[in-house]
Length: 507
Image (cartoon, rainbow, N blue to C red):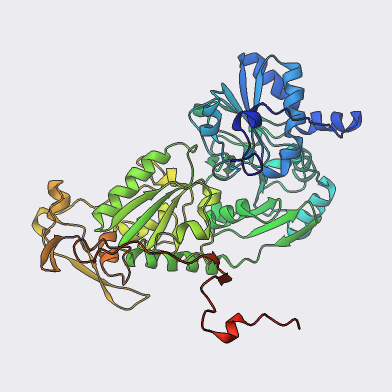
């Protein structure tokens, strides 16, 4: 094949690429300050890292080469740019970093602050512009009562200005609590931030300290989070949605630094919760469940997958596991036998809007609600799957099978279809730990052993099941000449047809 259609792979690998920097010295200085390169170099040199992986989200990739050059200039380390993450850019892509055998990862931009376990990690959030005076003015307008109990949450890219905001509000609002960004120290992660907010915001040792989603704040003794209002600084997005779903009993308001406007959030969280409850009912009706692996970096993701497989099996359902990177509609549409999917991802990416998908996508918490009788719907919502593991704040054990109830099945009524559904959680298969199928289905004068809850039953019920060889049933014929030409006009077309042989008239 000629080079017109195919080029040499060796030439592609050895081809030089010229990179031109279109930045002036002033822009370079702003870049160094924006990406906090001095602090990053200090982190690299103090730990003597030789290979450093730099992870950028898509919107920051234009600056990636320049940042890499600046870091290599100040250190002896070799940098690798991780541009295309396998999953959400808010999560740390440890798998891609291990491909180059990196010693550490520097994560730039917005982050969900989910804990990681494999490599040392440094978060560099950057410094998005924000007018602190306008933010304070919007806060005063939204909360005219100076005795209001408010917790201030914020997007990580605005953490550099929170200390100044606290200075403007602490004297006027004595009951305002400013959250602090904090990582799990056991995972070796560090933050680059120059905010004045530190642990001295905990006023009393009797205060209850809450650590969730990488934020730490305290509430007064004798009170709960539900007694506080939430003030969020940042744009509307997955972070705000995650907070509102988790603390759905709190009144939320926000300030958008880009539009310089504050507002009371009127997303009608109850409607959002009802949509999720509808997904739970769909999960109860499902017989075949697909487990979507939406992260390879969040700690304990393998543990929650095994727990999901266990509870799905005990609930009498069949599960299949899928690892397909970034999820979209065409990918999931290839598996029609799956009734519902459960997505294992970070808290922000777990709340996937599946309205465009052919089958619903639920969270591990919603799947547990559908399978575990001991877990009841109380209005509480859990987006962090680590809370569902043994020892977590929302862990509920699966009911142990009862020896005396073997063979008995409880029924339930589906709120979607109105039909009776069987809840088989006490089968002899679960108790004995064996898989003994006893469902014999006659088909084509043969006995086929099949479990009616598996994808095989869906395949057997389809009108088209793929190409069938039909050995011995198809007569053998000699090869014959096929059509010649192109699809728009084969050579044998028009033979004996006067109209077809007539040339087309131009209009």
